[in-house]
Image (cartoon, rainbow, N blue to C red; front, side):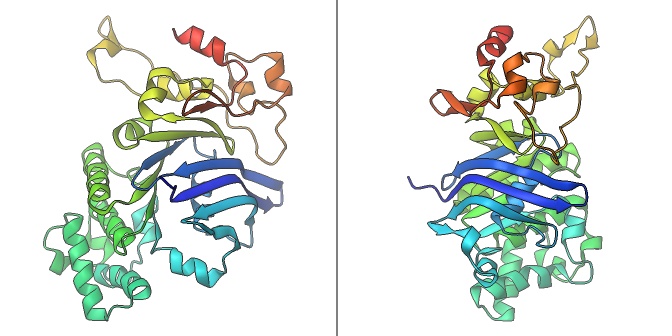
Amino acid sequence: MNNVLEIRDLATHFFTRDGVVRAVNGMSLDLAPGETLGIVGESGCGKSVTALSILRLIPPETGRIVSGSICFDGRELTTLSDEEMRGIRGHQISMIFQEPMTSLNPVLTIGTQIAENIVRHRNLSWSAALDRAREMLDLVKISDSRRRLDEYPHQLSGGMRQRVMIAIALSCNPRVLIADEPTTALDVTIQAQILDLMLELKEKLGTAIIMITHDLGVIAQTAQRVVVMYAGHKVEEAPVDELFAGAMHPYTRGLMRAIPRTDTDAESGGRRRRLEEIPGIVPALTRPIVGCPFSPRCAFVAARCRAERPPLEQPKAGHCVACWETRRVLEAAA
């Protein structure tokens, strides 16, 4: 099966007064049709910049894609003109942004915002586009959809605004949907509803999804495969079940130890186990990193880790990791 999206050695840098910020530095990934791929990591690791690079939404006055390839459906996106990208963006590749209240236009009705995207990409009349907008609101399970078309974003709850964002993103039946922290501002109940809705729509429409989040619980619920990013690099990639059963990178294991547990085994003597934080912070990306970028925070660090960057290797089929001390990590977890 041919991949719908292939990224190879992507590097996206920002040029600031403090120096060059290497936000993404050598990122590669594949996305198959109909697949859900998770990208996880702390804030500042390059997840969102990877997504914005795919859509060519990096602000040209501050940053740019400096090298690498982004191939969508056989087309190289990095060489397309702005006009050609506008034909793909919002049509064949769509994105749900982190905060719907800042992504929706506060002075335009919901119907107008959905219909605009449909008219732009599908050449329908305005009345036909509004009919399609109402169908999309029904699809994302917003009740009384005809009335909602005439309402404004501030009249909707956070969960309903997120559903509107999904309706806009899916209105042209995209091949790829990028969801950047789509449930961050929502309570747990609404979060579960939104994730279930996205998976249900994926099954109906066959859309491939890139799910960007810092929450491994969301990844376990939604994705088939997961990429772990740290300091602009991919440090591990595996099928979701395999990653949770046997993560090989110390950073991935640190993220897993920070997941709150609600099962009875998590309690000891009537008290819940304290969450384990990863010590230290993500390194400054304005300076070249010598050796493994995670080495200052790693419990398994050795002299080689500080001197040489570990290559991304595949110790098991479909499971890649960039770590010199994989054997010790697995032995400690056994």
